[in-house]
Image (cartoon, rainbow, N blue to C red; front, side, top):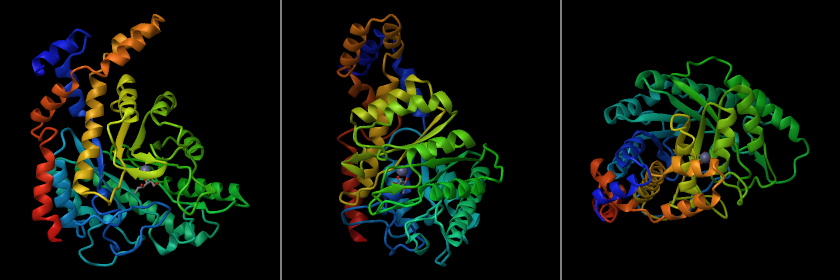
Length: 413
Ligand code: RNT
Ligand code: ZN
């Protein structure tokens, strides 16, 4: 079957393929910069990654300078269809070789990112970096009983928020700023409430200054546990759900931050029933929050379908969060992000009106029958056409370009 045949095939189910392609192309996917360099950043690139998160593997070619990271990102982005953003962490600052502390970062340290992004028509998202630092060595930051430690991280987060607002103003596009702190304990804590109250109050202080939501939106990310913090996480998912609802900030759902039998796809509609907007960290946990490269699996399709079925394209901010150092890092970006795009296209092509009608009519037999048949609809033809329209290589072609880049650039580093 060719593309024309696929268009006719989908039309039988009331699906307008052209409209589905246009819809997919309009949904931004925020590509995390940290896949390119194993979450090291440029503040102290030789430092250790801490905070209970880990990259494993030592595939050659890791980006070691801003120039290298940008070149790698450009290469990856040129092989991915759709609308892209870049997600930066505070440690990816451009300080021109100077040492700048977490509490000394300023908007000017991101000006080169702003012009770089502007040239490419990319939006930027932002994150304070509350890990990989001597002041987070105790395992606690915003929830520490030590006021000096809390104040340090409050200041860093406030500065990050100012930077995000500045970026938003400069680009004329909203920045979503995500707050994740590693705070937790290896063993059973004696006073959980004190730490959770500290976290609540620290966040309240960070968000106290009103910021125009045109330029910056704040999001808070919980999790279950981290390496070395197995017994307690101050910012649990319930903590942040309550925080987000009561304070009117976005709730971040990271696919790897729940118990292994829980899926974030099911949580999207819950969040949407109570919150105007949420942020996703699309990742792939394998046995733990391992941040594997996102594959085109059932859960990824379910995530995309849940967003589009709810017509929440503008309410769910899609960010990616995986980091694999055991394979070509540019390929990792391309595989994971193309998969997100594939899942969005798959969802846009779903005969959702027909399925919803069966459901309303109580005809669950037809609903199940159609849901199964969709799986063998001529999706590949539409995907190939989408890639072509977007001027990016089709499946089977893009890897040659990455190999070429690897040979010329990555192995020379
Ligand atoms: C950690 C969180 C967090 C980080 C990034 C680097 O478990 O998922 O989002 O992965 O901010
Ligand atoms: Zn995350």
